[in-house]
Amino acid sequence: MIRYRGTDMIEGWPAQIQAAQKEQTVTLDGISYPRIPYGMEPWWDETCPPPTKPCRDCGVLPGELHVTHCCIERCPACKEEQRLLCPTGHVEVSV
Image (tube, rainbow, N blue to C red; front, top):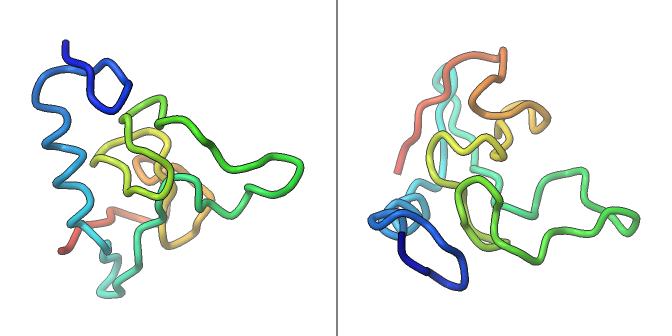
C-alpha cells in the first residue's frame, strides 16, 4: 500500500487515476457522451452537498473522472444508474 493525496491505495493505482482523466467520453450505440466527474452527478444539491473527500471506491478527488469499473461512476447516457450496471447497454470508453 502507498499513500497518494492523503488516501491509502495499492501501488500503481495513482497511474490508473491519471489515465482515467484522459478518458473524457464514452460511446453508446454510436453516440458519444461526456463522462460525469465525481461530485458533478445530478442529485447533489443544498440538502445533499457534493463530496469533499476522495471517492470511496476508486480514490479520485471531486471534479475528477472515476477509474474504469468504479462502482460509484454514473452512466453518462441515463445519468442515474451505475455505469457498470446500466441496462442501457455496454458503454465503451473513448479518448
